[in-house]
Length: 112
Length: 112
DNA sequence: CCTATTGACTTGCAATTTGCAAGTCTGTTT
DNA sequence: AAACAGACTTGCAAATTGCAAGTCAATAGG
Image (cartoon, rainbow over the protein chains, first blue to last red):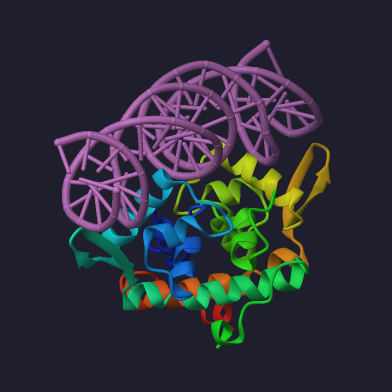
């Protein structure tokens, strides 16, 4: 449900919460599995992770695919649409590095 | 309270909600006053606007200044730190325009 | 067979944020 | 006095988040 046709509010309708872009960061950095996301420094909780992943899948940002059938195990991979949010995350890194000097410097390949 | 020292999560600790970047957009587009924000197409509610503005001021993104003393009236202006989030919003416009074709095209000067 | 393990969630509860709608407060102006 | 404008505040309910523990299904191992 779109709040308006402004591109900014449209984007925020999908990713304007505390966690979605954190998960996207992890996926851009190669994480695909449940336990990997749980292991990030921000310590997302399982209920929030589950509901965010389901929403991201519904929004077309990620795909949930089985990586093993016995027992059935899943991984989550970015779609092209999800991957295209990389620019937003890069700009966030630039901003935080400028105004919060204690923040980590992102790997060079993340910023290219 | 920072979740981690990752620049992305640090940024999201400040702007990772449904409304802060919508307000920032309005301010980048010249809005400064209460009624102007209330008049945006997304129809923010007064309680959310009030609490978001207060938080943005506390975080150093905006300044609340009186524009008139009788009766006392306020306006909100971006700090340099707040203005520097423009890049994030530009990337959001690019993303939404690419994947949600019905979204508005931002003014050229917004994207420069 | 039973127990233990792993991965992927789910549940119960409480606090916070959001949304709806109405209201209050202050200081004017008419 | 009543009306108006601006800047919030309040009451309520729904949604999101956070904490902690739990459940479920399908193994694997003894």
